[in-house]
Image (cartoon, rainbow, N blue to C red; front, side, top):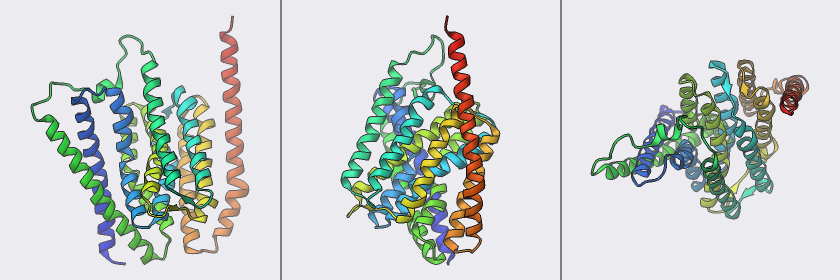
Length: 370
């Protein structure tokens, strides 16, 4: 294993993060110059930008025949989004969860996971499957825009989209050209970064004797989730704790529908799905998604102890992958402890939280009735 592998990995991650930032900045300003509303910019351009690293890496891996790397990147990123990023964010400060997120976005996230799992069940995501996933993300964006336009905001309440994406001053004569160049530069950085990252990841997998799926689920997944981590942590420190949660849920939906959809569309002979991913990693991702509902619903917030629980499970999941990949004998004891003690206790805790939240909501509803 040479130093060049790590140079490729680090340089690829740096280029991906910078490329995503430059792309989002240029595209959002360019859209504003051409009269696109801040709302649409926030819900589409920026949402795509946070998933741009995953898209670039998975598409590049798919074109190169590394389907396990592409799939592992998406599944691993979604698991890291919820367990690692939300867990760390909640440890900094309890996170607020909006009612719309629980009623609309989290069920859509779960539905997107079920749809992807069902399409992948035969071991391949072909171009038709990719087209269906891609059409679903377009429908999701349209739904968000329609619902946001219909929602009425109290008079005088600031609009976060106007504050973030509206033009603060009249653009200069060549502003459109400058921002167009930013978009081009961002795309070039994303393509270059994805090339380096994929090449470094494949070389690392071969040098360590690990599968591309394991590398995609760990190193690549965390690396491509850096924009989501930065966005959520910054939102927490700025006191915008509801945005931190919404960013993660939206990114997970885009990862499944946009990233996997695009990767399947460009794959020469379809995107192959590893039996290990179908048997273990997909179910883990779905379990993580389902666990969000009772935790989010209990008081409409993610407390510090729940964030610690998320973070613990991410460490446990990563430990399992490492033990499995290296064939350590202790994995049998580890699996036994998780399956017969830790997971049942956690499931019981989630059920109790859900029942308490339901009773509290029912009591509030009855008290409001005349």
